[in-house]
Length: 283
Image (cartoon, rainbow, N blue to C red; front, side, top):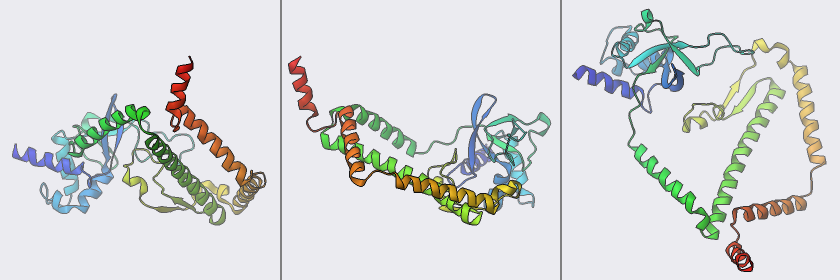
């Protein structure tokens, strides 16, 4: 029992914040959390002291992984769809659907396979805090119509600022990638993980930048002639936008009008309650 508890504690560490990178997928109609065999081997190689608790042999990574399989903490899986998707050059790193490995191979560890955890992730003490904050958030949302004007206005401008920042980052990311590709053939990505699915919140912001080299399979697409044509098209498009853009005064006036309309819809004007009372009195 003590050995089982020690192994379970070790498995919990693998699933912790500094553990093996994991994703979720559908396995036999159930959503499970799984890891790649390659990532598990790399983690064990980077933490030899942890692996040495269960094996001191040169092939300790494989032995530790197979021990987890025998104890039923992991299940070996394979991709459901092994054929490449149309237009894809290589299979996705983390598939969305898995199938169990053959019974004869279920307890054998292979780096190229995937391994699904058979039990729920240990609950963090912070989960209770997050649950409490969620309840408070729902209550505040329900009380929003009764909030003072300045609170409504602050929430509106905060949401507008957040949306503007997101759109600005995405636009900057697109322009930086397109511009670097046009001039060099390489693609410079700002926040390369920001559009990835299944990535933790803080992982979205690391690394800050990444350079993607041109792929040989793309051939003529990355040629200087194609890049020059795209560059001229982009320059023409932005020139047309600049030439036909409205004046600053017009933009400010329209923005103020739309803001006033949104304030009316959300009933967050200072005189909203007074106008509502007057309207009820006339009926």
